[in-house]
Structures are given as C-alpha cells and as structure tokens.
Length: 268
Ligand code: ATR
Image (cartoon, rainbow, N blue to C red; front, side, top):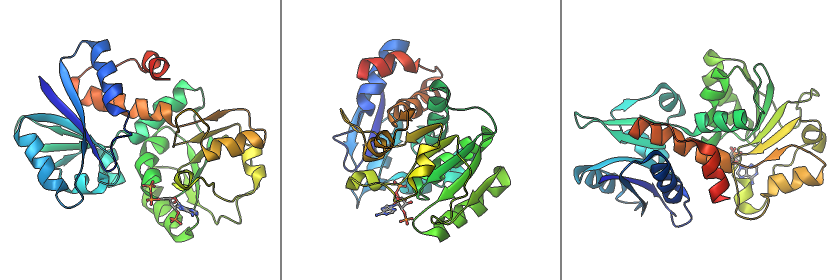
C-alpha cells in the first residue's frame, strides 16, 4: 500500500489523517496516511528514512516547513517564493519535489465561500510564515493586498519581495488607510495565545467578510469571536483552508482531486 504521512511537533491534534482517509475513500485510492511526531534534532534523518522505506509523499506542518524546504531538490514556484514546504512527493528518479498548497488551499476556500472576486482589497494581519505561504496564490488571483504587522519591518520586507507578482503594500499598524476592505484575513499566531491583534475595530466592522487562517474545534477562534462581537456578518475560520490545502496535496500525489464539500460536512 502506498505510504503517506504528516510530520509535525506536536502532531496528535492533526486532522490530516482523517481528511486524507476520507479523500482516499471518496476517490477509491489504496493508500495509508499516518501522523508522525517529528523529532526536533533528527527531523531530516527521520524524513530520509521514511522515503528510503518506500514513503511516497508527506505533508509537513509546524515547526518543520522551512526545514523540509531545505531538504527538497525540486520546487513549485509558489513553494520557492514561500520558502517553506507543506507537501513533499518523491519523484521516479528518487528526488524530492516540494510544493506549498496553503495559499491555493486558502484561495479555493475563499472561492467556495464566494469571498473571492477579482480586484478586491484584502487586508492581511501578520507577516510571518503563514502570510508568506499564501501571498503568491492570492496575488495570482488578482487581489490587491495590504499587510499590517506588529513588527512593521517584516511587513515591508514581504511587500517588497512580492511586489513583482502584483499589487501589494505594507502599512503601519497605526495608520491603516481609511478605505473599507472587501476582506480581512487574520494570519497572526495570536489566536494560539487566546488573543487578537489590536487594531481599529472600524476596519473589521467595515469589511465585507473576515477570514481567520486558524480554526478551533467546537468554538469560535478569538479573532472570529471578536468580529462577531463587533457585528461582522460574514465570518469564516480556516477549517476549509485546511481541507483545501489537503485536497491540493492529495491531487499532487494521486493525480485526482477530491471533492471538498462532502468531506467538510462529514468532519464538521
Ligand atoms: P506563523 O508561521 O504562524 O506565521 P510566525 O512566523 O512566528 O508564525 O509569525 C507569527 C505572526 O503573528 C507574526 O506576524 C507576528 O508578529 P511579529 O512579526 O511582530 O512577531 C504575529 N504575532 C505573534 N504574537 C504576537 C503578539 N503578541 N502581538 C502581535 N503580533 C503577534
């Protein structure tokens, strides 16, 4: 049976095994998919052993995405610019192909939610790895992007790096332009600390929709809870992005794209 896995640390909470099992059932693929706890010291060795023992591909999650990127031999363009990899596939000649399906997973989910028309204005909160992973697919979907971040210099660096791909700017968190945004995306890791970024509430209230790249089981994330409190009607968490990125990884490995909608319903 073809072997796949997801690597992370921690990993027990990962929904990927369940998602890929359902994809495999839906598309009638004979494959196994396990969650593996990555060792901070020996991650590269572990990965190499997995592929030597016949592993066909894997997903990579925190904190190993940048390390997996460094191991790979060939890259998709979106992976190269993200400088981080969430999907590896072994090629026939034994080399490792790296992709990053986070951004396309987000774009697919925004399309599914009817939140992605071309030429929209999007405000992204945060300028870490999560933001870098999704910028290219968003720009390729003709979105105009403004980034804000606690550390302004990091937002500026990202805007400079991605300028060749589309319309993107960084602004100081205290001087967000008084335009209304079609969509505000939370890409900070603050939700993990039960917090949200401190910005002018009007920015959220005037947005047509908000999206949190994080999700949390059975309850609203802190960002979604805040937006609801402020009266924002169209609020979405990142669960659909999770299933979306998984679907694009699955397609890369198996050559068949699963239908996301029934899987979302099943897991929810
Ligand atoms: P990830 O891979 O999840 O993006 P990261 O690269 O560490 O993780 O980035 C975390 C993001 O959340 C950054 O935008 C970070 O802001 P800084 O660049 O200023 O560090 C943001 N973030 C994390 N903790 C924060 C806090 N307490 N206040 C404001 N922003 C925070």
